[in-house]
Image (cartoon, rainbow, N blue to C red; front, top):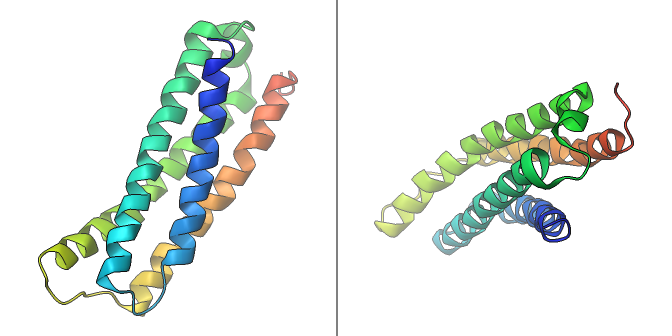
Amino acid sequence: MQVLLPYLHFIGIMVIMGSLISEHLMLKPRILKQQIKSLAGVDLIYWLAIIVVLASGLLRWLVFDPKGVDFFSKNPLFHIKLTVFFIMVILSLFPTMKLRKWNKQARQGNHLDVSDRDIKKQLMFIRIELLLLAIIPLLAVMVALGKGF
């Protein structure tokens, strides 16, 4: 477990980054129904990766990490890292809800009601998520080195 859990954790983080970058590249004005369906698939992969990262991270922290629970629990940088992660997850709900709405319209054959303003708004959420995701490894390295005490 000391190899498998960190491996799953890192792979999950890479998939999250790839999914967010894919969503950012795919979201554009005058988006087509097929592109909405593809985006919904990418978003599903994103959420599955979030679950993998959360589960593997919790198992590492609470059960399998040789440094022990106290090493992490007493470090304020670790709590900042968790907070940044959860803020990122909460922010990602906004594009997900919008994508689900658009995907439902596309599946029902209705006219897509996607304005350029909506696209720009979702892109801003994704950019903020990418920024937060870029901060998390810095915090993780600092925690692993025992900084923050």
